[in-house]
Length: 286
Image (cartoon, rainbow, N blue to C red; front, side, top):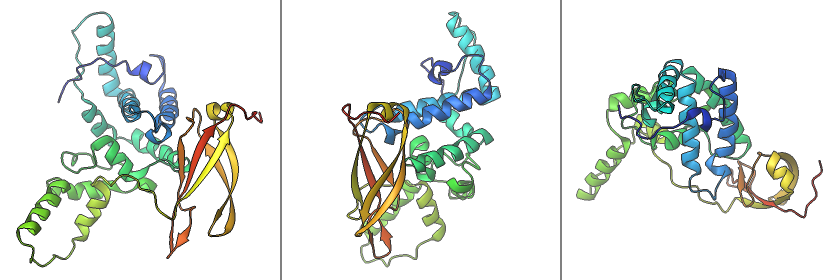
């Protein structure tokens, strides 16, 4: 395992004291994860790294064994000693973390919050954020995310049997097709298709003609502290009302995506894209 070259103070990253109990550590991580989600900070190029860093800190401090090792290492480091070592890389921490019950529980909660806020969530988000969206090298992470987030465990077990990256398989398939253009297409393998849907990195979000753009202006107080706003909008000529939750510390110009609230066509429905404008001229209702 690769050693972390740069010292990181996980207590400072999670904004908790060294004496913090597990409930306090979990509460702080949950708050920071919502604040630092990349979709909450679209104009911050370092948002993804910050989100990973707080998750890494939680992965260590929520694991009793790693926390004990880290506490010794941190104490020695702050005292100028080098007698202790902390050998876990960020990849090691994520891999171990998502096997534990703590991650399963907290990410079930967070995914519900992410969905309510219109942020990316679920299998694809977890895979792309923490593991690059590929199967290769991730076969040891069993039982990763349960329930409504998705049943990845079985997929990973299958991936172990496959024994290689789906990206590599995709490249091999394309190379064969290019070498033999008259080759008959093969029947799709439902197992591989299922793996692709879970592990292959999806293309960037693209706007759909069925999406509806909607602008909300809020006062700085609501942007700082969060708020619930009732909005009315028209989809396919029908007026709909919706209660929208704006998370705390929301940046002006940030966007929220509300799934399946756009226009409908051929049994498909787009999304409602809310653009949040923080207007200092609007008086707070509080």
